[in-house]
Length: 359
Image 1 (cartoon, one colour):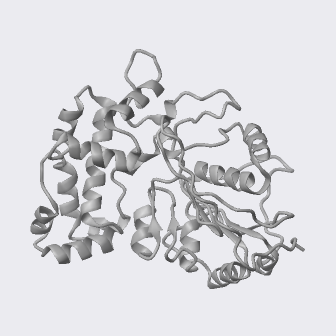
Image 2 (tube, one colour):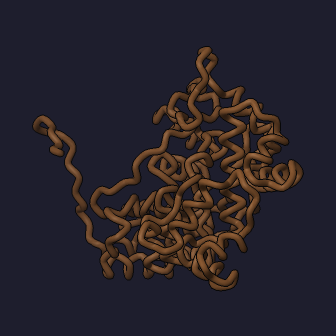
Image 3 (cartoon, helix red, strand yellow):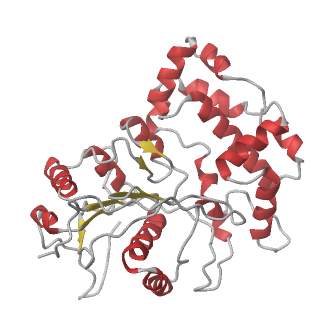
């Protein structure tokens, strides 16, 4: 591939070295060139020093891998692009990875999912620092919704087979493949352990080290995702969907479905069909790029078309802190359209958080 432009075109350069990070109030890692390549030690040291001195650290998309490598995500909730979330969870088991979120605000460390979710997080930061009016004006300028939720975009539907890339060479790969092909049958983790010729305890440990998730939780999630597909693409009743997804009863389906998606199966189906284009032909279950756009500035949500994670050159963007320092932040929670967005309690500014301007 070649990039072409007339004279005077776009040129990306980094006029400052890593030493400039020490004067920043917010440091942004836009992405990382490859999740298989270790970040430079000098960059990791600079991030650690900035965080220790009170800077807010932001990792967009695969930038979460850089934050994790620096140890800034240990014991914290975080997210990244859904394709790489299992790898992040496996490589850094102390990080609480949730690929269902568009972004996670943990006060002084923030992470986002894919490229478009990075815009959502940046708008959230503008809203936190400068208020809703500034964030809404910027969203109008970018021609994007001022606030989106993962469920409104159908983001959850892209997580069904997200497993670490390394699983193909692991002995458990065959067991995982069998489970995904037989979700309509009633089986439990003991069945999977027996197929792997392991004790339940050994299987739990190996499965968690491979996927970053407990096998029971993974199996329930796969069954819920299968139920989503059937609710979107079929006219089966909720009772029939439960049976075709391996749940022992419709009550079990409803309980797990509500816990994971914040709505009942019937409400999810109604909301999904209300968002579908009325063109006469059914919309394929995995084609959210055909979603209708809300009027600009209406505040409505549009469904998600996943973008490929950024793989550009490594860059650390230093953002000047606000005049009054960093105000309290709030947590992001995914909900369906008809369910109010749950907002967590604000996190106070940490002691010693940097408030001096850049330069």
